[in-house]
Image 1: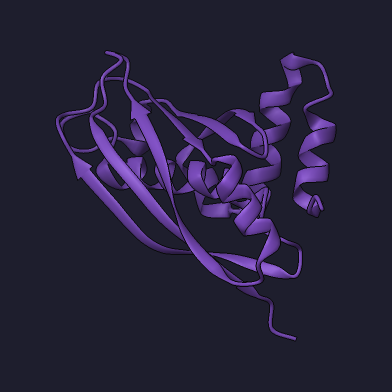
Image 2 (image 1 turned 120 degrees about the vertical axis):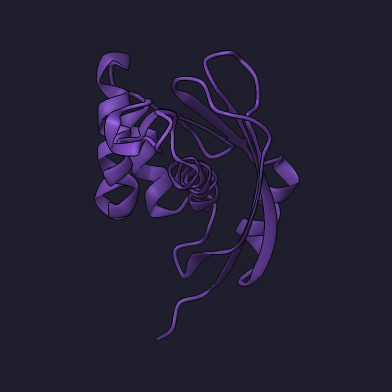
Length: 161
């Protein structure tokens, strides 16, 4: 059964491509306010895959002019949370349990993050009231290299009554 969020995103994904990014980003940032402060932009969003970008703008830069490590972590968390949240039943809440981030080298330019869930992961999330899974995210920079390697562990539990 599709959750409320999935139904909203399905409707946006039927709209003209030129406004989808804006609306997808707007919906997400209205719910996850902190992600909006970084200026992330959602490129695409389905129940199995999310692609999100973060431009190297002054407000997210570190002392050497590249995207700050924490801004990159917010990108990873947001991207995995987007695809994970599409599958969590409405009577449950998604919770980030842990983050594993290995910074490999200096980031160059904007970052693009892609997170995917397998069909098996989707079925587990949709069919159980409580659990946890790792959601991998691939982050590349403008050199098409992976400056950081990330995995986010997400959990879901029933809402308190």
